[in-house]
Image 1 (tube, each protein chain N blue to C red):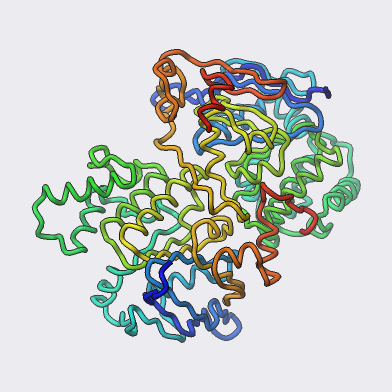
Image 2: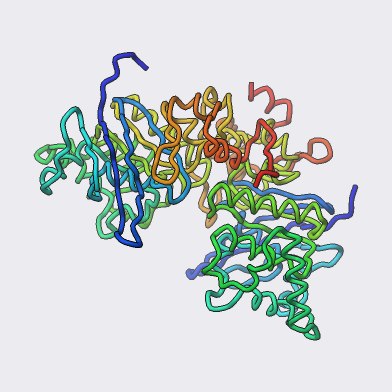
Length: 270
Length: 333
């Protein structure tokens, strides 16, 4: 990574409180986050630690209770729907469940055409659009000719998730949020998908935020790792440092609970 | 060589779809497990792992049908038995099965002790409720579960606790063989570890004599089982002791599978993940010859024509490929 890194997004004092009175839950508690361009960041935590709330806050899907988000140096403004749309052109997400990510009534070409239109290609000739879609599909090892006139439910989970990456390829956002993207597919397709995301990162230089409970995956892909517990980051830093020499007890516990292959897995500490 | 607890010979089972098409999801599978050993089954989604687990129970319900082959549990052939007989005298006593979402099997309106009473009552009707309670409490304590779980409703238990409760209930009659189909895939890492520890304890204390563990998480398999079997498109592609299967796989498919392991340990970041291109074949009309041939990087013309048999290496290793061991080792380098 080069030295003069450009800040892409900065979050200061993010706080999200759900409910009030007796049901008041602080899901995210005064969290600071800085993302640099072309960086891969992982947020690791157990269920209920607030990882997904952070992703929703960054995407602007829920309102902030407190805090500020700066996008490319300016305060984020998503007060109107139009501004939100403008914002989402720069930040995109891939979620856990590919089956619920598509509109079941729209064919695959419609999904991809939408992306081209969103990037301002509405007036391009039809041939050009097909060419772009074919290119995007071949990037993720899918054949566009086989996909036209198909509905999302006709694809397998791995194919759908790859089509999601084809969308990102067309949209070329500044930031990609991968929220448990690979937790529903098996180990073999997981490698394929991670490979594609990394390739895409190198090609269009976007920032990727992985939100995951799989600490092995976080270690494999990311430059910076944030370990999250009960709404706060307990440990953060370069991946090698955090995963190989964990300082916090929580990180050590997380690492102990993952099965290992090179070292002995200690089962006595449960 | 220990006593053989479970032997399967050329087992074939099929699904019949509503268009009356036959899909052979388990195709001539043979395996053998000795007393005190565990076998892991690995493979991509849709390769027939779970169907094999269902088939091994000997209890078939549509659309799954038994075609041919033998399943011998501790010297007793259970294949082709009447389903009612299987349910009454085999399930739970000889072989127990833990499905993927086992915790959803608990009826939310009943206390945990009721499930145990149900199970024991069918097999030993003379036992009183008090005896059952005491027996269940001892068994739960032995397995490291608090005894007050028995008096709770399933909604009061956490996911990991529910899963462990279901495992404890399914082994309450002392089955010889336990088939665990992804028992920990819906749990977080901490609960997963507890479930694994419990399965290990069951094996170590001799409560179950043999175990089949199914998952696609290879690091987990490596830590739990003695042997690993790799399945692809309904067939066994490789079987080896766990250490060799992970660190020195022979079959090109196993090599690809082992190349996709992700663990948080030093050295992982230097290794590039090896993804296998393409998708598994449709079992409605599987490719003639080797089923892996369309995706294999070492494919030869002969692979697409002849069907391939098992090659045995030493005593406990085998793989299904046309290439010899030396050839594969040469190509690997």
